[in-house]
Image (cartoon, rainbow, N blue to C red; front, top):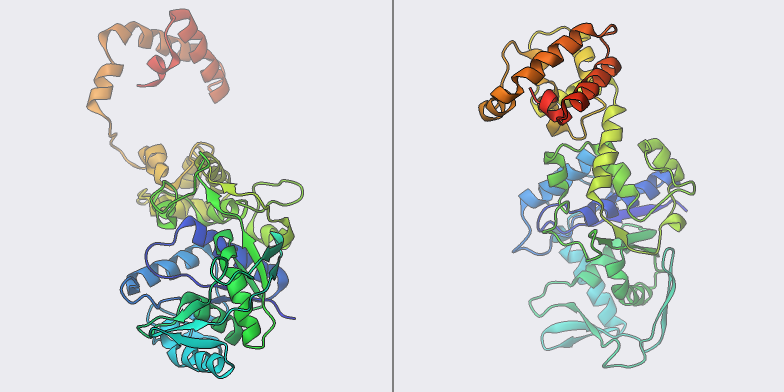
Length: 406
């Protein structure tokens, strides 16, 4: 059996961290298993869906390097697509849904109720064999309290998420549904719909939620919730995908910094933790630092240009030498201009207020002593200069920053 997974976002805003991780886990599993990754856009909410929001999703996935084997080629629902099981926009699949609803009605498994159409649930226990959560049982014997017949088409004629989700998974040959644990409560309904259509349900894998550092559920308004925010803050794709992969999954040897090829090779659903993951901004920054300094010089130079560093007509050897001096210091791309722009300009930009404070009259003697100390250093190397600086600061009983700031 060829594995087919899907990422089915609703374009109502930016691509948040939870959606990005769900897309990544689906993509990783498809690549690990040699299967297909399908992108499907759930754009049935006409009031909230916009071409701009669709574009944010498409560009976000491309930035992460998550290429899809089937799906839309643009943010135009009527535009071109890749694959032969489309359309890949739900707004273009109305006839398919209507046909499937008619099928349920003919079987006596759906009925009209005040203009809406409800699915007739069987009153029985439903066992969900989840690849992450284990076996989950939903007891549906109480008609009113546990699981009443649920709406599959609203009174305005629009199909509901439960119906379109299952119909699309059937029509597109999806074998594994990998999604957030908050969808686990919907799964009994989806299994019932699969069986009503005479189709064996997909395999299900519900991944843990992402919490804030304080243990609360992460919302769209929290710091770090937006993938777009990570891009603007100067994080690089390889660091972001590495970090996201570890939000819920971990290799057996607890490795941390890994290239994508290694993550693909080692990733598997049974290794995803049952416990909720916690977002750690400091770890993301550390991860970005490690990936940044491991970049080949060609790519590091491209990052500097992206951040706004102007190399002018400087030769390549000088640029490489200059950038190598900051590689162990820079944590985010946006910091590169502050660390290295002075290498490539004749003028020196400085904060006049800070300069006045650093060169206060009471510091004059200290600077004179520092000049003399540096003149006496035999080996003009970083280690020797640092040792001389600290020794002088201790002798003068001042903090090192008094001597360093200028």
